[in-house]
Length: 256
Image (cartoon, rainbow, N blue to C red; front, top):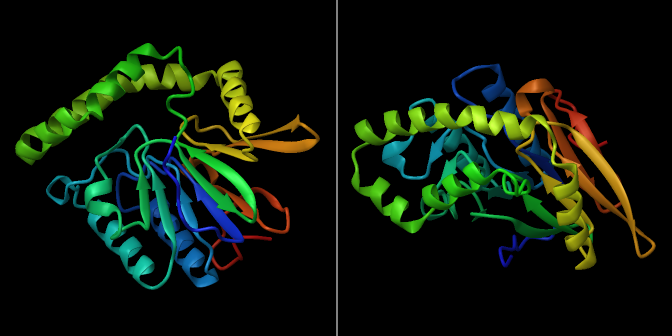
């Protein structure tokens, strides 16, 4: 894992799995949180699947996505630090969105530092090593060959085909997400903690979880981010040692 987000802030907010698919209250609240982060100068880390399906190429962008992307770019131009870890429903974002929509985009797990704590940020979709069907699909769909094929096919073919594939895979994803892979997650976390990582932050499972582990006299944390649409929940971390989950409420500070 060599993907590193260069900024080292004293506080940050983390959100995943918004699965936005239309102009509705969930999309508006998401942008309100991003605007609040900009106003408070709090970096925002997005751990994948912000949209139900997102192709990086502008020609493959759905109409409802365009104003959301443009608003994020506007906030970033205004000073918001914004980072993205691709999820299983994100494809080829780095080329068109790194340096424009986001400060940095990671195609896989990424390392970061917040308030002196070392973090690994992961969408979480590859933690469960038993989901062979999904791992095979990801290897193909995220390959350079697939990227080139998508770039040369018209949107009228790619978008309907992608929607059909996602519907077929949804049953498999829900089955493996329904039972949280406790053993696999713990093994992955322990390997990282042995390397000096303090926080492992995951998305994908749509389950809010906070687990503490003791390693060589230090407390290590695994935080699993909930689905945004459930209760507009996010995770925060600050240099004073405070961390946890909060519900977004317009007008209220993002950190306690």
